[in-house]
Structure formats: C-alpha cells, structure tokens
Image (cartoon, rainbow, N blue to C red; front, side, top):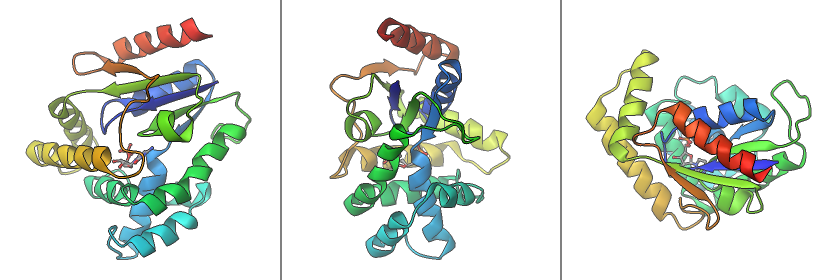
Length: 218
Ligand code: C5P
C-alpha cells in the first residue's frame, strides 16, 4: 500500500506520517530529507544553494547513506537548512535528479533496520502528484501560515534553538511562495487527494480522520 501525505511546511506531515507508518506497518519516507541533504551538503562546502551547477552535482551524487550522514548536521533541521532545501528544490534539474531515488523506494520498501515492508507512507510536497501518482491513498494537509509558524517556533525552542516567531512566520510565507510558484512540481494537492485543514485540529484528531479514510479504502 502506498500512502502520500503532502502539504506545506509545518502542517504536521511528519508526525502524522510516522504514526500512520507505525499503525499500518509501512516504511516511512520523509522526502524533504533529500532536499535538506542537498542543501546542507552545499552549506557545508560553502556553496550558495542558488548555484544550480553545484546543486545538480550534489543531487546527482545523493544516496540514502549520504543523506543519513548529512542528517546529523546541526543545520539539517534548522531554518537555514530549510531555506537551503527550498532553494535547491525550486531547481528543475535537481528535482529530476532526485525523482528516481524517491520512486525506487516504493519498488523495494524497507524499514530503517533494513527489513522488507509491504508499502510506504511518503511525506512531502509532490509525492501524490509526481512521485507516486498511482498511490492508494492521497492526503493533503494544510494549516494557516500563522499556526504553522507557531508550531515550528515552539519546536525550535523545545530543541533549545534560537527562534523569533515573526522571523519564522516570514520564512514560512517565503517558503510557501517558493514551493507553490516553482516551475516544476509546485506545491498543490493532487486532483484525487483528500484535503484536511489542521489549523484547529489536534494531531490525534487528524490521525483519526486519516485512519478512517485509509480503513475505508482497504
Ligand atoms: O518537509 P521539509 O520542510 O523537510 O522540506 C524541506 C524543503 O524541501 C521544502 O521547503 C520544499 O521546498 C522541499 N521539498 C520539496 N518536495 C518534497 C519534499 C520537500 O520540494 N517532496
């Protein structure tokens, strides 16, 4: 079974997707990690993420193990890493270079310990539209920029990172704009996706809604 969970930054995709993967015993693929890995790879080399030649070279040499190594970097989950990811993700050649790696995962899905899984929960921006257009269940979750920025801000504070709410809000809006206006695979729900606005919902409520949708399909 393939489930895709798409939506803008901090809509709650990560928490929802990992809970779903656990409940339905599926592998989990956080596709934002590969864009973050390319972004952080460039940052650590002192290269501007807008440098399309270098970004493409990094994307072409990206592997799962390299991505896992880069995920240990302090900027992997920071605002800087998120901005760099969003910049490289707006480049069409980078998206093309990273597509096969994402699609191949569905052919041979694995849990983190290497065991074979019967399916995948994908989390991203274009997993229902581009990566897995034939997915069994497609969910698009969203929330207002203010709610999402507040969730991110709290996450940063809980991790002991410096954070300013107004700055996080401005960056959330900037990423939304870049993600939704890029030439290739702009952020938008698939025609057959079910859209859920999580602004006024707790994670358990979102989880229960999505489980009901999945259960009705299987
Ligand atoms: O989800 P996350 O915030 O980790 O994603 C980082 C960035 O990667 C996003 O802002 C987006 O620009 C990009 N991304 C994407 N397509 C995906 C997943 C992430 O463009 N499928």
